[in-house]
Image (cartoon, rainbow, N blue to C red; front, side, top):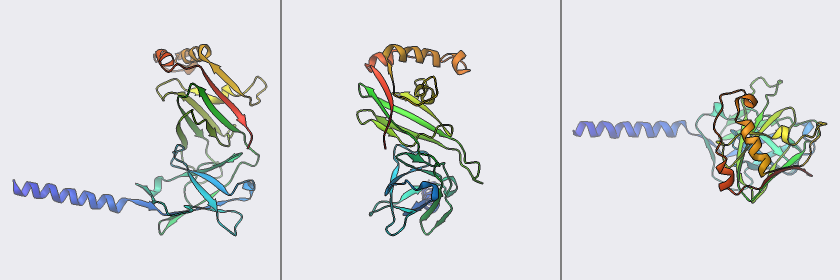
Length: 251
């Protein structure tokens, strides 16, 4: 019995040591933005491993025009299980980048370089009445000039009492799905909702009757090209949903 207990303790210590050895820590991030990012402000957002809910801020390094760093004060290091899986993108009002893997990792410092969109991009404001939990997925295309483009689906969950700014909506290079309450509800194709018949981006508000109709259509095999899944319309009633609004906004 004693030898068995000793073996269990020894196995635990080995696992703990291995976990510590495999921990990938980042105390500083250096970001180089290329010449097509001339409109980048002093503070930009960095989205790590698709977690847009908790995007971090990086600030322009004094005396440089194209280098941003994180953090700008003492903060706990970021931790990852495997450096090979790390990827990130940059967002700021009016622009964004593709997702990229780091160029270098050394001495707990990550280095990235990014290209921005060559044209200004619209920002979208997402809100609802009443305030509800909203979710969106930004399915970002791959940079065809990148030899190591990662798969990239940036996810955000937020409470619409604080309307979310979707920064740098990159039409034709990303596909955005929007969910009411959680991802168990039908995925609303934001790309289709915000365009008028001429393809221009416009403000749109979806009321209760229209939302119920969309949920029914999106859950059908005919519109989603998949096995039909039941839709719990009662969720709309329980949440007292009135409307969802997506609108372009100035920088």
